[in-house]
Each structure stands twice: as C-alpha cells, then as structure tokens.
View (cartoon, rainbow, N blue to C red):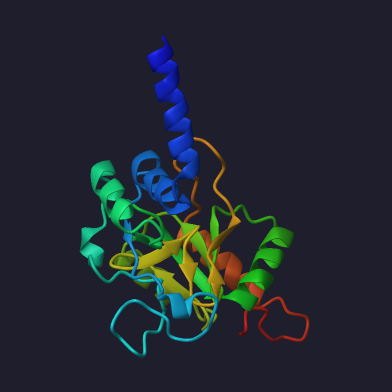
Length: 226
C-alpha cells in the first residue's frame, strides 16, 4: 500500500514539474486524436522579440519558431510514445498540429482583425469552436474540410475578406502553450475541459459569418481590414 501511494505521489510530482508543451501535445494526440509534431522553435536571441530568432536555417523565415522543420510535417502523429520521445528531447518545442484529414482545419485573420471578428460574431450569436491567438494572427478552428470543398465554397462567394487564410489539407497550425516570435501562443477561446474532442463548426458557417461581419461596417468599409 505504501509503495502504491509513493508511486502516486511521484507521478503527481512528475506531472506538475514537466513542461506544459508535453501535456498539451499529449492531450491533442491521445485525447483528441489530433496529429502533432514539434515545431522549429526559437533561439534564445529570438524569444520575446520580433527579430528572426528561428532555430531553422532560413534567415528570412516568415513564421519564426512556429513551423515544422525537423521532423517535417508528414511526421505528425497521434502515437503517444513518439510524442513523449519528441518532447523529452525538446521539452520547450512548439506544439504544431497538421491540419486536414481527420484533424481540425482553421480560418485565420490578422490579430487586430481577429479581435474585431470575434466581437462581431458574438454579437451575431455565432457559435464558435476553439480560437488560437498568436502574436500576429488569430485562428478559428473548424471541422475538417477537403480542398475541393473549400474551392466550391470560395467559388460560390462574390467576395471574401482578403485577410483570411485557410489552413486545410497539407497545412499546419501552432497551438498553445507554444512560444512564437513576438510572444506566447494562447487560447482566446479554449476547448472545454474533458476527454472528448472539442466541438468544431463547419467552415462554410464560419466564412459566411465572417463575410457578414466584414460587410456590416456602418461606413461600408470592412471590419476585418488589417
């Protein structure tokens, strides 16, 4: 009995002391079945700055730290042993999710436009899933969609805000509590606690709401401009 209690105490202590990135990666991979892999990460010089600071060799890296490098995106997995091995070797590595397939996709906007969009979507009564906020962009997670579905959706629209980006098959998204150039990645709308995968809206419903939000500015301009 004492041995069992001792094991439990050690387990609680180990969980409390381990980096949050491992906990987040394990939740994504094992509880939600979202394939993940470690991101490139930042050098010490790049933390908290808007300079380069990416651990990858590209001196003009567009998303410092917040992208796959080694391993590449195709290595993303839900295998618990692989996830543990990766973050054991790189405990502070960003958590990167491969979007598409059976995993969530996303629609993202510049950070300022994202804050405006969420306020407007709340006013319209739109039900949203989790929302990821990076220092530069906010991403609204949506149900998986194919490139064909996205193409049909955009073809049917007369206009969509040019600030929108779509993260579907073959894409990726950095997840909290990762660190990116300029600051921390966080949940603006966090998934509800529990083991079930978070609920996700359809991409068409989100894009429709964003178009409506963008064109409802009193002066006829766009609420989702940069």
